[in-house]
Image (cartoon, rainbow, N blue to C red; front, side):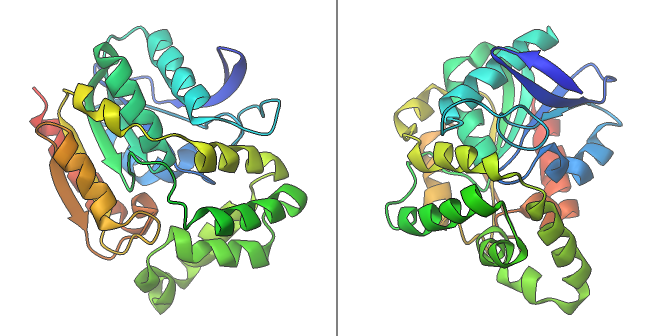
Amino acid sequence: MLTKVRDTRLWVEDSQDGDEVVCFSHGLLWSAGMYGPQVDVLRARYRCVAWDHRGQGRSDVPAGDEASIEDCTDDAIALIESLDVGSVHFVGLSMGGFVGMRVAARRPDLVKSLALLETAADPEPAANIPKYKRLNLAARWLGVPGWLAKKVLPIMFAPSFLADPARAEDVKEMTRRMQTNKKSVYKAVNGVIRRKGCTDELSRIRCPTLVLRGTEDQAIARERSMALVEAIEGATWVEIEGAGHTSTLEQPEAVTRALLEHLHRVP
């Protein structure tokens, strides 16, 4: 449902039941739905809360030309506070991880544990920006037509996933989902491209932290993810074979299993 959060309205999905809360923060060009397989399992034990970031999915589109990571971070803090449950388990993938790191570092009272999937703390690498800007310009004027979705798929998914005949229907479904993005999604892309790094904040993260990466992630190089493990005290590392940048949908069972093991380790 649409929920007033700060100066916007976010689409929030809340399973309601459960003493402990797991919050899910999605990746760029997706929505809360990218955690569907995980929520289906975790909701048996945890209250699961997932939302669409401002400017994406069914949430309101902000004014200006950017849905900044800082605004998305402040949205997440306000949303968690509104739950009135104390601290939560926070799961963030890619852009959602950018948000999760900042929330955990700045408001440790709100984060009981942190799971960082397919993400990094540095700014967007300069080598990526020209390509992303070209793709984003097309999205601003055209939305995400089929030809543009096909250019983005190799960034989002593992080569083995895209080439597997047995997953052809899954690839079609992922393409369809990507094409549901409105033209205004360019504002969210600008927020990701323009973000500053938060490496200097990682030492303030003290909660149990899982860092997870698909072995075929084309968007986040392994050394960028490993830098999180080195910077966050006590962080654990998991790699998911055959997964790319959208591991929750490519290898859902393996990701769910890793999240459950992580949550079970939290006192």
